Length: 221
Length: 221
Image 1 (cartoon, each protein chain N blue to C red):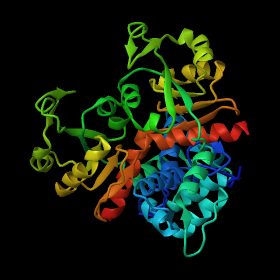
Image 2: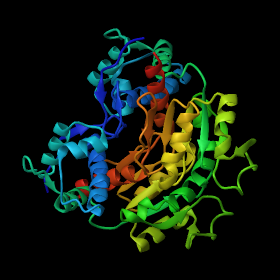
Image 3: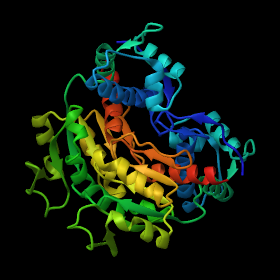
């Protein structure tokens, strides 16, 4: 597999490729899939750049990193580029996801069509609230945290989605790691300490809103 | 106000400062507030870098951009740095937010303590579903989209949070822009076309999960 550049991102986690590059690959992929549905056989770096809001030079650089070289004046073959990006992103397979913390956010994520479309299958639900344990949600039973090891061993979930209050997040993360989870998507507004072999992506929704407020304030200056 | 560097981000939107820098300022701020609560009067670039996962050189660069210079061997004064970052991020004031699309995600966001703590006040709710219009949620009435202009004129919301299905997102965005909204936080998996004077931050949760899958796959190679 082609290597991408090594860097550290701005979101609190060391990672080999830049998060920005990986994020752009996801966004190129969305545009490419639209183009393929529209019957387009080739795509230019200018088209991809316009869709994502970067220069065509940046597009060529990102795609060269994953080993895809377009032809001057012709562009990139759409289906081959889709296949290459899906392979690099690990989307040519299914990922099983365990969700801990069954509140409104998890309910929203369970019904989010984008996850199954991308091969992310939610296979197990957990909550610490005894009144929720044993209930079913979208066909899945809600387990207690004590059941994590046995349930994860059975369903083979590799990714964990943490949607619990900040004060419970580290305990939940530790339990997921102990049960063999290899990556965590964390929605709790807490900094998690994880072993080096477990990957972490944190989604802090306040940071997004702060970015927006900043942009609005700057544009009003 | 000090200027930050000009760049384009990887998330589909042109913006003057780099999103990564603004995101790091948000994360430094969280750490600084913790340190202040713990009674720390000064903070070093190494401490801030460790908390956010970047080098101390990156911290010094980010903070120099906003006009804050630490003293070698002493560091940055914690309270002054908090004030400076809050001012640059536009957090020294309240922001009123209108929410369109009252599903599980919006319910989760309404109860998210981080928003009011940061000065983001949800002041108006809208939905296209006639059965929801007229109901109240956390003390706020749910309005129909038709009522957007009058309700926004009254509550003076400047930011809009779009939590509707992808196919409805552009129509909702257009209505919010027509009613005078200056920035949109978009959760719908759709590319929105907005006038140049309206700012956009899009949160695509699938992109986050794809980044995690990619990191897990890379670390297993």
